[in-house]
Image 1 (cartoon, rainbow, N blue to C red):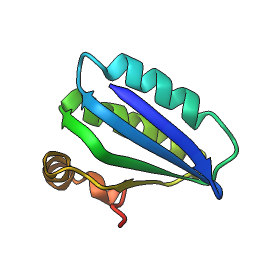
Image 2 (cartoon, one colour):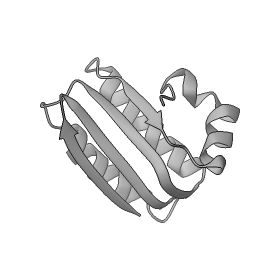
Image 3 (tube, one colour):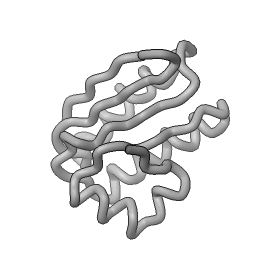
Image 4 (cartoon, rainbow, N blue to C red):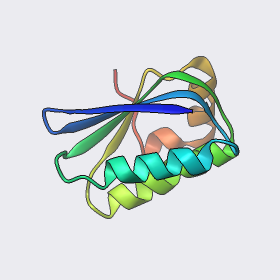
Amino acid sequence: MHIKSKVYKNTLYVLLCGELDEHSSVHARSVMDDLFGGNNFSQIIIDLSELEFMDSTGIGVLIGRYKKMKSKNIPIFICNPSSHAEKIFKMTGLYEIMPKIV
């Protein structure tokens, strides 16, 4: 798992690369918590175009970050999901709390 990020016009862009699963969840959670701890953005866009695999642990990582940001009134949006991620987000209803944007 590799995570890239940048802030542009009050938006934190996060690109998840690789696999978000039980083996990478501790690293991903730590990196995302560090990124999300900043105060120089008003929304977050998570790009899943390079996410190759995600399991239930990965879903838990994303839900945990959503809950932290919800308490700060900072919305999270999802973009460019792979077909695998798209299926998971639709099945679990994650798009209801983290909407997909184009």
